[in-house]
Length: 201
Image (cartoon, rainbow, N blue to C red; front, side, top):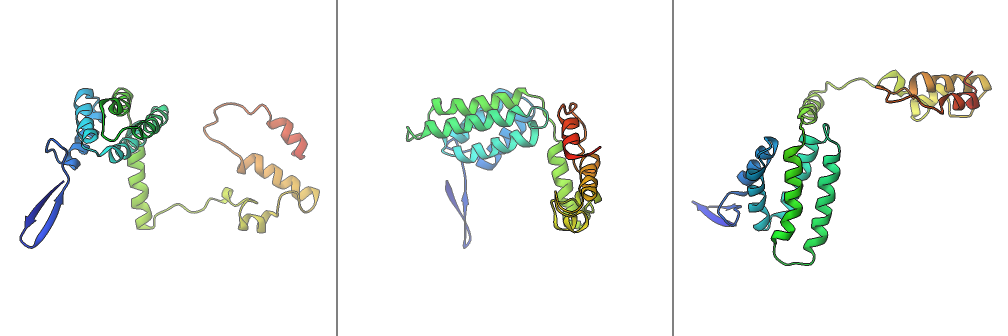
């Protein structure tokens, strides 16, 4: 970390040990990882690691795993987080960043360089933020007003209360609307038995 004077103002400039600015190093790490350029990404990761910015480095790697890889390969998030936890455990035994500690970082970088990537999560997140700021959010859908919320209880009553016919209406509404899933991954082998027990038919 170096101090630069500009007139009366004092600024702190974060730098790696080799003089590279930390923010540019992080940006380069992310861009090279997105492009699958392993050696370049690993180099910038090492600059941050050996300069003592390990925890900040992991925060960026975690975000990268979610932002760019998680939708295409959900295991990326699991792998990167697991390696971070192993790194945390390992560094408690040493006072200075070592090459051995860096191997956990390197494994994460290599994994993310090699997996397929997709930016849709980040794009959608930015759109949602823009909609929220502009007050353009969706209305609460009718099918969300079920006995789990106050308005739903006012309209439909609580589960297992009222007449048998009122309970039957709630059960039918549950299976037709409130418990509906899409896209459906597989048929529920227990649904018919549950319907019979709850008096759907």
